[in-house]
Length: 462
Image 1 (cartoon, rainbow, N blue to C red):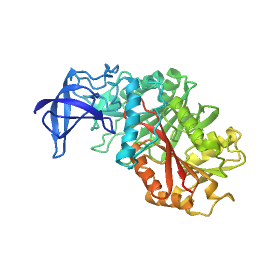
Image 2: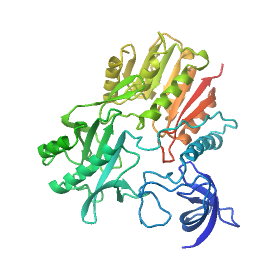
Image 3: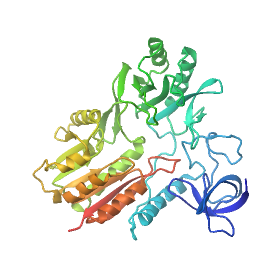
Image 4: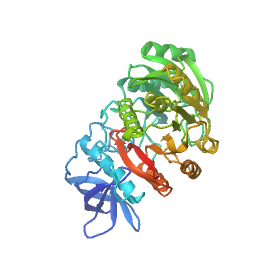
């Protein structure tokens, strides 16, 4: 394939770098590049408006390029034919990562949201390494042996790892131990093409006290040599306080199925976020980076009450296990605080967490957000005096949820998103329905990757 030189100009939303070949206006996307790099690249894919290329040699390194510390990250030398798809920014100095994530949010709001002037703050940092509290590791049978690792970019080919610098060392050791048990016990590894086999994933959730819950995701509900597996894992890992099985029979990229079985130990783990204590089941949603999560929740709280605003009531939509509702409840005074979540297990956890944190007055409802917003108000306070907290899925609000939200005329909306593009789209739709975008705070929940979390404040125009 053709090789040529390209100067990298900027980063795109998903972490690919953008440049132009000499004498051409065609946009070239180059993964693992850094703004300012002069590169020799090889053409991989060519379209009418753009092309994709792979780095062959760094001729001049851009400011902020560093050597990736992980040997499984893309290496310019090309020694490894495949590399881990979990990180795509280790080649960037961490301060530059924070700067580029803010720029990605700005770009989405200007280009997709059509906001000419955008109040975006500097990105709040995270510990750059060993910061994740949850990992999901797939298994595969390849090269005549059982392997555990992460997928290579754009494939389902496993890249085995000796270590993952984003995970606690405990999680890494547990992954290797389960892989060793699979080899010794003869556990059949799931083959997605043939839809055969048993073991699919290991999910490990840890907390700041060093405790862990482990879940083996399997295709079928039996568990060969269960007693021996429990004995070996509990002996080797006293930090593990619960072992679970999740059954996922479907041919899908969705990791967890609906069927759960506790094999040993506790049903939950307790995570501390600021002054909160949250009981979290193995399948419940909680932000994967606890220190950065605290920074996010502080930002949400500050935005909700900014300017002396005192809501008549607070709605936390897509509330999960109730963390954000409980975080802001202490400052809500006598105002009603209500959470809405369609996953009944998460709602059960939210209600328990309210009692655990002495916030029994916070109410939680099991319902789809669209359906809840159609109901008559659950409080005598006017919608015009209410504050709403939103943390929808990555795809953002459904058109129906957004329409019903805007129609209720809530005074202030704090929108939490892990996708700048879907947020920019929803922010524009809310702006077209009478809201003003007042502030945006990016938070780095996902160091070494292109992903960025944000919290934003939108106020109803009078």
